[in-house]
Image 1: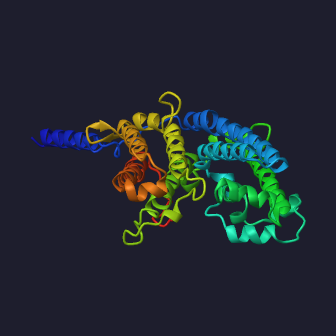
Image 2: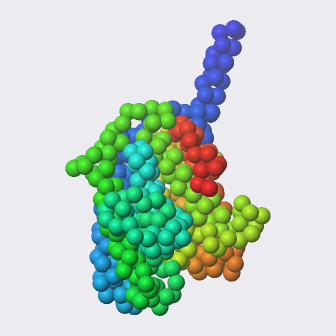
Image 3: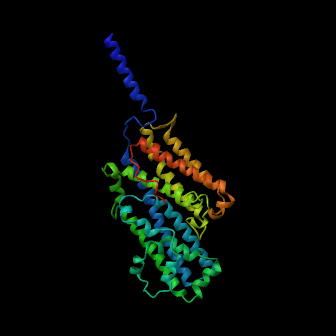
Length: 367
């Protein structure tokens, strides 16, 4: 009788252990960490950096043409190239990992909001605008946001006047040219950090054997969460008044002058989605499936994939510039905000639990 009792106790313990893994959190499976990291590097990071370098080169060329011959047409071309370069940047912005984070590469390319007053002070100054000058500039007076201020900070006639007949027009031209040149230089430095002919960080990162907080998969996931938090809190939540008793702040959107905030947000989300899915179920979604991670009765990978679709659909329902949509499409902006928050929960609570990743992003990050 005692033997039978012990037998059934063993069975119950075995079944209990198996059932504890039904939500994907009690089981321990391995997954191809190197393969996933290599996929992200080869399919997203390296191509994205190449596109960014090309886009900043095109922007530099269009700015050069504009300053040599300031017209409505050349200004329009420079503005269009700025938008293209910024959208390309959004595909790279999410990978603030390891050496990129340590060297503060992101702030050298796009630190917002920019400081228009400081930029104007520099323009009316007398300091020689050489390469060293632009290297020494503060983050809020250089990069893509500073160029947006100069190219879009007023209607077409006002901007043209500042670059032609204004008393500081020549230095304004030099400042814009220097920013474009420095931006292209920084895009090149960022690319060199990752590529094999440079510092080869793509390989070193993917093949890192670090554990704990230095685990490369954990760093990738936390970088993605950090960007999600920035999109939800800073890029949508602050303008929507989520941290100020519902008082709207249209001037707090990312793209104050060019009015492409929604498009930049969407580009961030598309890049996050691509990093999660890989090219063909070769990203973090594959890791979740290898871990048998579920969300209720549904695979967690499928749940997160659907939430990305839901979030992008919510963003697409905002059909006006975000500044205007805050008022006239408030419900749509609110829906986009909530969709992003739901996506964050899935990553921080469910994905990180299933993959045994420590969340290092705090609630204050992204504010």
